Length: 224
Image (cartoon, rainbow, N blue to C red):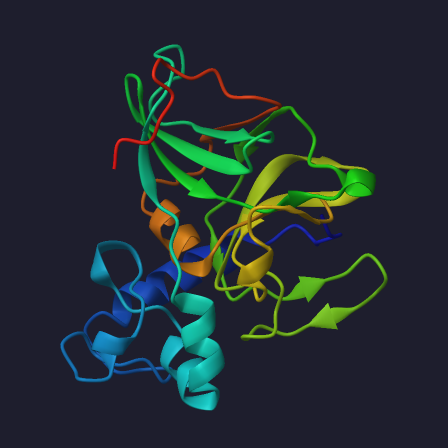
């Protein structure tokens, strides 16, 4: 977890609006839907173009492909006690679940906090619209501009309440090989394709539960 300033809601709204505009025109380096280049790029919600994605891909195609080539999305059976439309993060399994229906969930592998900066087992809410290509502000004063080298990856979803250490968030990554372990300063890291997939279900005010162990149904196995 890093110390982030509270993201301005209007900034996030503008990013979402820009994403929608990019669906029909080539702007900010992104291709129009249906162009040969756009087929190589990951897509945002409803097939819209991701702001800045084409610019970053052209700057470093090999790194871009590495950061956007992996997904861990699977469907799972879970206990029916979990509320559909919420997110549950299982610390013991390093997995985030979107509860898609009664007893059903979409799960993704995640990276969580290290021992000294553990992700707390508590309830959060999503407190604003997600932000594409957020600037990273480290606790040591480090600032990293948006881009492929940014630890927050393609998307940042802020959570409330804040802690004395700063804001927690669910975000992408510039180190996909570390997903599935205790590697962060408290935030929840996802593969970039996975956080874009999760974004389809996210809304401000959504409940996010971080639990030490998920209550699963029997059998507690992925179904596809």
